[in-house]
Length: 56
Image (cartoon, rainbow, N blue to C red; front, side):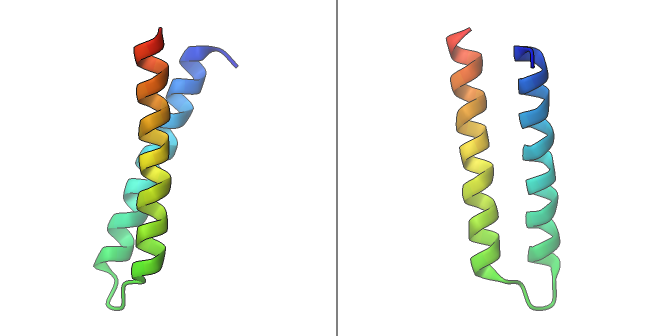
């Protein structure tokens, strides 16, 4: 996988997680544990993207 492909893949995952977070928060009974897990995963992806883009 090329660097460009890896970055695009991470961006897509980040966007998917954002959608999942929004969906959970709009739910009549939001699962805060699930929301926090999704936010942690999203932050890890953001950190990885930052690391990749600043090192190249």
